[in-house]
Image (cartoon, rainbow, N blue to C red):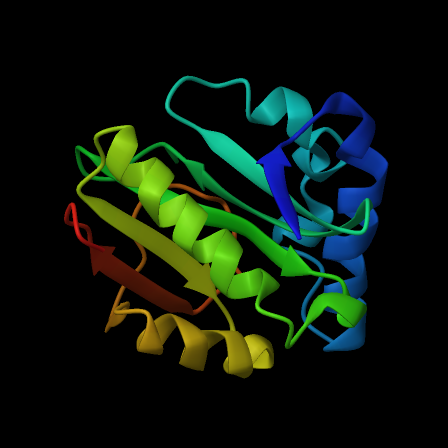
Length: 162
């Protein structure tokens, strides 16, 4: 497995992986990343300062992605864990854990104190993983992601030893 930062040539493959997850789990397509115009050009989205999108490859094939993004409206020094999706073939191989650990370290390196995320019940397996990684449930959203179909909100306090 190889982790690297997004390249412009990754856009179409990553958009397909993300949208396929929504279709596989019959998750809402409106009010989510599925319908975001930025999903088709993640490379440009992640040119923003204090953001990064990590791409996982297995034998040279893109297997998934996960990023850190300074979503507007978040409290100071909070970032959002975003675009965390794996291809069906990549699940259960440790790819998700590696991406999450890389993003957590990147957030610390960029000076963030907390990582926030949004999800939904259709992705309940992922939510359990977030809880195991130290994320705690919130009773309201933070920031202005525009993802109105997400009704699970979580946050993790970061430290140098996360």
